[in-house]
Length: 232
Image (tube, rainbow, N blue to C red):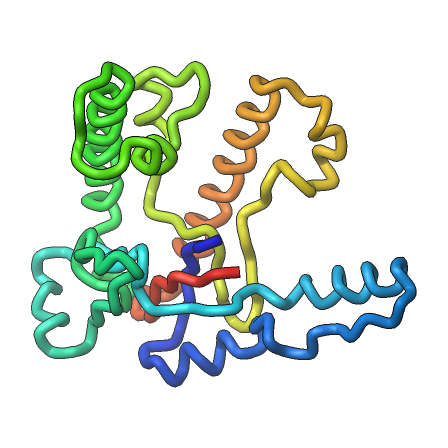
């Protein structure tokens, strides 16, 4: 599965590689012993730090950062960087994937997310009404992220927040958004109703957005921030 990751403090490919290396799935994979309990415990311990099997600056999130107008020149000067496209050869969403915190147009990105959410909702409505749209319909429905009971208002509200990534790598520590499935707080997952699962996902998403914003707000303005597409 592809995830987005914020890496702080590393402006070059080589520096990002050094920060990412301890979290590779290729490190010290546990050998099977034949003891199922011991093997499961060893795997669970390995998985705590084994976060990625492949990664790329940009990728599916290419052009993650929107820059303030007076910092667009940083791209031409080679300071801010645009990463490589993902498998589909996607164009950048905004301006770059590596930038200093103070260069990023945070409010502009939030407003852009809301506009995009309205456009996706309109496209989703064309799908469910039977009107043809460009591309594969089933894949498109999967990509919309519409939940049961959604209205335009609830759908757009989920996009109305500052930019966040699924995970953060900061000062050698890896943080990531919690999921409902496999979460000890929701050990009763299999007996939860659709409404309860939806409420839990919203709660966890709001908690992660708040944590992400607080961490980034407390970073110095000259902090280098890179958006990574990683697969685990």
